Length: 530
Image 1 (cartoon, rainbow, N blue to C red):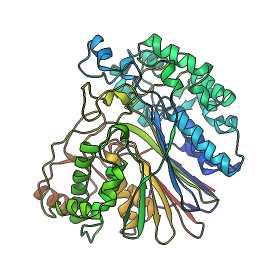
Image 2 (image 1 turned 180 degrees about the vertical axis):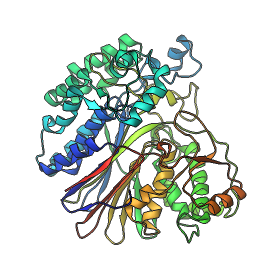
Image 3 (image 1 turned 120 degrees about the vertical axis):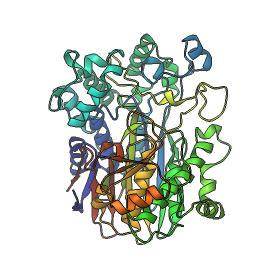
Image 4 (image 1 turned 90 degrees about the vertical axis):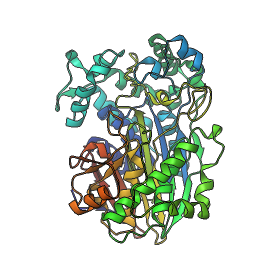
């Protein structure tokens, strides 16, 4: 897939074709890019449940046509009862990755939808919730064909998920992993979406639905309770930003790793790499990633507990120069380093008025905690399983603390007037894939779809396991791989177009009104345009 789709009236991209079409239909009905993304996100929660859902968190980056850029932090905090004593009493030395004890943070996604729609409705009256959730309700009620990737992942994770409360009933009909093309239904989730449409999105946190969610969580053994839901609100936040040659880049502030994504690009902007996908390019971005990740893992977490503001390093040109000078242009720096996990969806939309949205939402691991709440059909996230059971230090568990997030929606404003939104799923791979996509397009002029389709790499985690090697798709030139090995990189080849490298997407709005889009052939997605 190399041809870049183009249109003038609006465009949506996401990792599932039905979700992209749901968003485009909202644009056709006069909705804004924000409303299109809500419809896309809701549909993804149904048709791509292994990757996302309304039981997870989300982050928004909205680029307005007047030049403003704003973000929404829709990340939930740890439960009031989620403290060290709670897990000691449960006999835990670490927080389990699956099950009710992993479902220990509030799901913030729906609150992000609500705040984003408030922004949209301040611009124009907008469409009602029944319309925005229409397609998601239909697919949950009437069924949706399971994708090959969804079937393979469910089969691979079946042993660790089958015994978790509620999972078997929804996702393992008859006790067996489904096959591609089997029809998935989630009647309880359809009912929940109808309740949200009728009672309002705030009912997820304050209302009859919230009481049902809290009761199910309590009965299953989660530390979350109604008070945790009642006190949650999405937050409008200023974006992080950094300037490079020809563009200002934007991303999400902590607790996300957005600063790492910006650092990679700011450092690479200071390096010489004349040829895209050559040794200097590949080596330079990998070494910039190491510098950015060291900074991230030292400083980034819940901003309420950080001693350094993330924007400070991005504003300090001398500090960036020093970090760039630490990169050896010929030799790989040592890299055994802890890796992060996570599975996610990124989606984007641009409307005819020039509003561009970059949004990412996730339940963390595939199917999150695996817990499916019986009355609502919601898969609850396990983002809080990343907390450390420690008295203090990086990402240490505290009631009310937000967990570190790999999620980070990206955007750029170019000096020539172009606006770009882009992103990907993939945990540790998100900043790296963003860097590959953006630099190919922006620095080297590679067409947008080709920039997404081109071979990628990942330093760190692969799906379902931890690894510190440099994994690469086997479509790179052999001579480049040979030089990378000679430079000291510990290399691990991967199949072409593997989902390990994430599901990326991008949209670019030109000053003429032309919109360009790209989707990832590694996903089940598409660009929907009119």
